[in-house]
Length: 486
Image 1 (cartoon, rainbow, N blue to C red):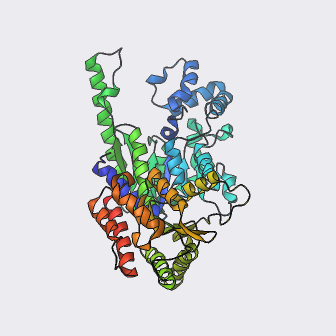
Image 2 (image 1 turned 45 degrees about the horizontal axis):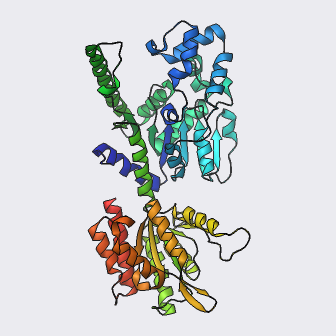
């Protein structure tokens, strides 16, 4: 996809914020609509029918909910919330991408539980805030916090839906307003599937604007562009459909300009599928800074043992120094040295968070229990899924008394190809790494090497006479080319 300039700006800025730990998501009903959940009009249609109103002619949906409450009280509203938001249990591809990203703050006005369930399915510990009392307790070692700003389907009596609910929101749910103000001040938000018709959000944004004037952080939201093809009502003339389109187009532009008052930049897409493409690009770029090192060695030939250990140590140190995160399966003969290099950097450079430097998933060292071939494959797929680039070094193991090339590294190359991970095989280290270098350079496009400069650097990693410093410099150069051309 050829991204527009605003889309590129969103991607670049939000990737930077994710890497800095300063990104947040705000999900509206549009994020879950693709899963079959109803939007507000769909939710309230039956209630409108009971009031002899046409939902398509109603714009004040909060007022409509209040009208129904005035006549029939709460029970039917509660019944609608429970039934409409209980049917589906699995999130969309957008949910899954967001759950994989290193984002720890999620806000939503949705009653469904797709965000928290998708996070949990990615082995993340979720701290969910639905009621005021939830702020009095916190889950230790949480990976993400999900604020259900309008409540949850499991507590329909407290769901925010009527005009009364909104009028009393900042008194009854002040802790949510305060927490959101804090996050909006210190994190960059990406609003997805959110229309900005919510009076709570407008109130909070207004308070921040009063406090900070024009010094607020920049945020982003994604809107589907109003298009003429969406205005084809067969009961209307072509002229009337055209007028409806032009009216909606003007109104969307006015809303885009208005949101700039709150430093919210609107990014337009032609269709909702482009949102998934944008999120995929964000994920790809975030993962490009995670470097998987594939390697194992029972024998370091053609290097001398001390020379090889020094090379591996200096490589992991250099990667950490260049602010890359190393992903390692603790390969035999190599993994411990990789960790030592990262730890060395962490101590020498007074870097305080080891988690920013290393993702360690020790690969099973011996076969025991249910460690079958399929399990090992799944393990490799999981490790590599965290990375965007893979470095291949050495690659051999001892079977009885014979040194053979590591078949596991060849499998890791296959997985990299499947997952879009870019390989950097270091042929001069020999063994499986050299075999992989030959495969990659013979068919570069198949292995996602579509850049001539990058390919030439990788070809240079097969030249004899390179010092360990030369090899490391070429690896870092290759990574920087990948980051530049992504």
